[in-house]
Image (cartoon, rainbow, N blue to C red):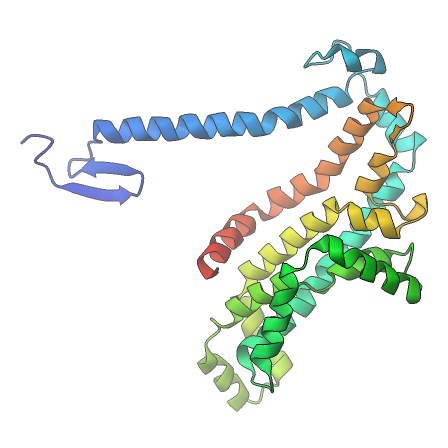
Length: 295
């Protein structure tokens, strides 16, 4: 029996095999090209990160030599950043702001999404459309109203002032509403018959069923707040309240930039992101996949 006449069986979307388990020549070529592209993409993505770490280990005299690896590696930059600047304070500030925003978004977006998905109230669709319409407003146009509100209520140069624009998001509400619609009404009705109140139904039935969406929302919101720059730069007026991106900008001045300190600070700033990714990589991948399906 020739190879062409054999019936093919799809065991994997990327691999075609015969019933004898033999792979077609074309599948090997396609798989090789796929791996080649993945390796090329991974190399392009990781080179800047390696360059950043390598630069953080260079002494100041080697910064402008444009060598990829340090000729005389040193930890002096890390010592200067950690003990000679306000970097630890900025680090803690970023963690506080990110935790405030992420916790708030998870609670309020989940509750609001659950409400819009499972309850009827007057003008529900109109309210939902109005909330979604805020996604079309550029962030730059909201900065002045946010700043006026922060000044009026005394939130200027406070952690709450930095965090409050992100305590609830229209995108997160939309995401959670889409997932909450998939919670079976029969389960909720059965819980009501058993005497469970609405908060119990939300916490014990709805939330466990949409855990991947909540995890994805929390992770992406944490990353967004960790990297936020414009709004913290505007509302934080003292170095004691700076977040990491704002603080790192102060390593550049009119006399030039301390690239070794900037790269050292940037390297240290990526540690929480790497930890979050390593711990929650399954939830991140699953959340992205489910978000794509629901979107």
